[in-house]
Length: 222
Ligand SMILES: O=C(CO)[C@H](O)[C@H](O)COP(=O)(O)O
Ligand SMILES: [Co+2]
Image (tube, rainbow, N blue to C red; front, side, top):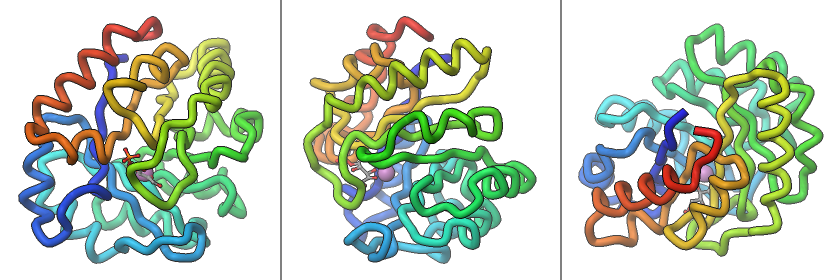
């Protein structure tokens, strides 16, 4: 599979959101961070805003739900137009049912793990999921430093995916930039979220192309 780039609007200008969404149109996904002030110590946006973003975005929506009670809320994000919905394993009561609900609504089902959660916890769920997100920062804020010590998790998951003959995607989120993208792709990642790297650049399209090129060059599993 080709490397995919998902700019995170967490680093966009929320007063000019449509402008900043259109500015990253040559990426593959629009990554939307939903934070509830409980699962993480930050608050961003919720269902009505995601619904409007999905209506104006030229890219499919990759919703990253950092919220409590995803069993109740995750399917609602698929209903309002998210193409991929990621819930956190740490917050889920019944991850298999959440994934099945998302798929039955036509969305891609994805599960995220925080830095402190072992990758082994998500391995039994691989057959129910379309993507696993391995966090490379503590969730809650953009602009943090990439955690290189998460790379063994990517290697373990990539090996499990290949052994199972699965087409599961592996996403990295947090601190992905020109300096770190090769490391995470070499370790097994193929969908790369980048917030501050893309929105901090004057030429957002150029930054997306540069990241995609560096990622593609480093990819042995593509
Ligand atoms: O989920 C997130 C934070 O919890 C964001 O997607 C992530 O931090 C992206 O921002 P950056 O690329 O600046 O690290
Ligand atoms: Co995110």
